[in-house]
Image (tube, rainbow over all chains, first blue to last red; front, side, top):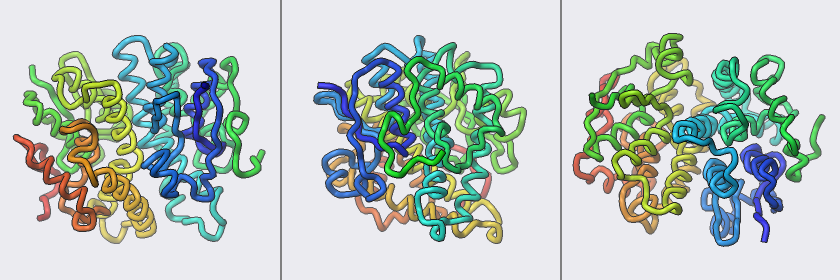
Length: 212
Length: 212
């Protein structure tokens, strides 16, 4: 029985896991979640899948896990890949995963949602401007860290990279303007050059027609 | 040489660690950071203490760690306390720590800052209203989870509790209204009843005179 991932194409948090599964050569199948019609917030989803009302959720036989950072850690234990090789590297990976949740993908995913997936007249302009400014500070931390490194931790790709890159491959309007951040851009190219890499919309079904 | 913690009284993220250190009976000393005058965002702090420009930072001899979730995990390895006893418990603790960073303390700390620590005329009303509404959803997840449990994971206090409670003991105006969330309120009482528990402003020096 292969691993199942509750996910949807527009979800960067799901993409972290979909990418780790794919690059590790693990068999998996996507269970599409109808996020934009409220599936994750329904009582059924909260009671049976995830009380936190979020994607991704991974099911591996009897094991059901939520929170992408937990799932990435579990997969590294299972596959021996992407989790770092020393206690120091493992801590450094967790550090970037936590920072990402708090400062990068957390507000980044929300801002992308507000800028793209609600009707234009309902978009809260002040909120979008505020979070865009905060995200700029996060992009600067990431860009500075990548000035003299190929990947965020150690010499090869890890869960830290999967976590932090997850919303940066989408082409829709967002706070991230790739041309402004040369070190991040070069790092995204290195991630996309990994054997087997695929765009989020090729790994998971999007709800909306992708814009190019 | 005792453990040093870069922190300040108003920082809930620092309080997570200060509380874990105190309740584990570990000797530690606070190094006060002048956050409100920009110390964490200064080039000196970024270059010498934390490139992410954040508190807390823990220094234990040659080990320097940032991100409260990483520090809590490190302290559990060192003291054998609060980290869970099975792989399942450890994953469940990490799950709540990540959720907290993304949905609870991350936006909660920011909203508290906007509501209290900038001049009233500069407070972004639309942003505050927006994040307050989102935080209500997070409080509901926490309150529901605590309906039939004393602590978030297992039968006793863990890093999951330290992480999620960290901004909820402050008395200043915030998105959190304790009377609205009976299960959270009872859980905060259980945390405050732990031997040695102290309020954030008693463990760390605040920059502003506390309001009561």
